[in-house]
Each structure stands twice: as structure tokens, then as C-alpha cells.
Amino acid sequence: MPRGGARPGAGRPKKQPEEVKPSKKAAPKAAPPQVDANGYKDDPKWPFGKQPPAEPEPPPDLSDLMPLDYLLEVMRDHTEERGRRMQAATLAAPYCHPKKGEAGKKEEKNAAAKKIASRFAPAAPPKLVAANGQKV
Image (cartoon, rainbow, N blue to C red; front, side, top):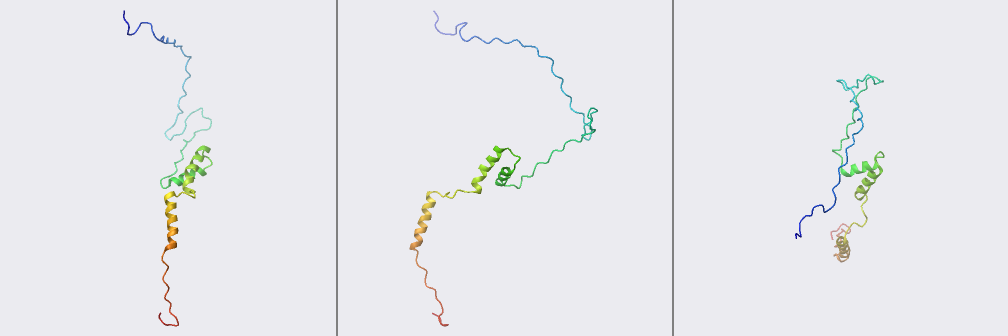
């Protein structure tokens, strides 16, 4: 009697393919507007005469702008969405307003050592000043 191997009819039944229903008539696609050589709409149904093509606004020149300046510009632009303005403000804040205690432990230790060392520095020599026109 065989013990291993695949058994016919065992396992999850396969999904039956659904019948494809014929769709209703597809809506006719709108034809692109007729345009003449100058780019004007030339459609007899257009009630306003010839319409000039819309000229896209040239993108601003960002080549001389530093990244921090760009972030500040985005932050101050009221036409931008609020989330983007908040993100720009968050990214620009450390560069505009650094934390007061940015120094680490080593820097604090070195600063304290310099302060203490100044107490034990040699005194300045006396100044030589002429008294009554005579050289001292």
C-alpha cells in the first residue's frame, strides 16, 4: 500500500472562473480640440472666437538659492500646504536658532580647564614708564 505522494482530489478546491459579462456600450471618447498652426482653438462650437493657448509660467530660477534660503521661502509661502510649511520650518530651525548648550562633555571640560588655568598664569611684568623725563 502506497504511503507518500500526492493524492487525487486532495487539497483546496480551485476557484471557478466567473463568466465574463458583456459591458454596455462604451462612451465615445471626446475628440481633442482642433488647433490651428498658431495654437489657437479653431472649433466652430466655441462661442468666444479663437482662444490663445495657455502659456505656462516659467519656473523660478533656484540655481543661486542656498538650501536654507529655499526652506525659509517655502516656510513663508502662504500658498503652500500647511504640512509642507511645517516640515520646512522644522528642518530650518536648527540652523537659524541653535540650542544654547550644544557643546558636549569634552568641550565643557576643556572650557573649565582653561578658566582654572588662567588663575595660575604668570603675572604681567611691570610697565616701564619715564619719570620726570628720565629713562628708568
